Length: 337
Image (spheres, rainbow, N blue to C red):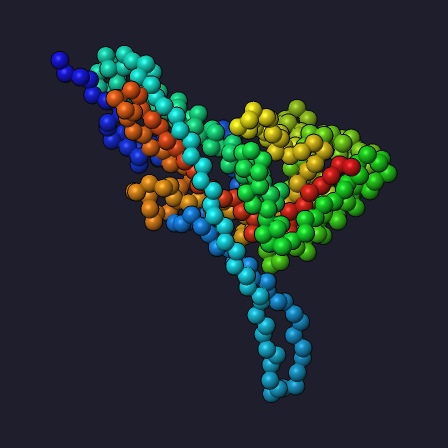
């Protein structure tokens, strides 16, 4: 009696096919991905070097005709190296999950097995997506954290920059909130250092949002703004005040120990410029597979192989991302009080 063949031994389940499949599955977790604030930048190696060049911009003096010109000064250059984190995640497709599939014939078999595989890949992609969101939020806060809360990189320390914190003092009804916003805008403008921006976005905790919109100096402006938004959209998705967009952010996830971690702490907010060209990106490195050596990295990889004695099929996925802010001086923490 012949044994039935393994349905996963087909080109449709090769590394190339699975990697393509997991990269086109919908990303159901990713506010920052949707904002496009940190575009993907593929690299060939697991280590990147970021060059910091502080340009010198100075006024040119007048001189008599025929006199020698002033000499240009070169900016200081500094190289910093970062190792891109490796994030593997495994799962298994058990025989009972595809039991009975073979009775439907070859085409139906492939379709049904694909459905089972797609279910697993979607679950695995969701976990990679929320992990990437966590890393990106960390980069916007200047401190990239691992799943357990340990620090992977403190960008302020790496770039030798003192973190900027602005207390909005929202507990005090007399606080001039507009003046606080102007302080934030001026600080970011001064620290762009050759970069430009089209606006300022602030992701805020629920508590910060409620205190801001309920503040005596903001409440009227919020009420007027609501008139244009009422019954049309969720009013927490972006309230513009003094030229700055404040948006409530509810990102959170469960760490390996079972603790739910909020990506933005209670009564805090984090501001950053938008519309920049070089300040933010997400580096992605290639997987540690033979076939991916010296290739440009992809956001996600997937691979499968049969278990010992054909007792199921192991699924392996991995991502190798490093969200990065090249100018941590443009990252500002805001406190409600």
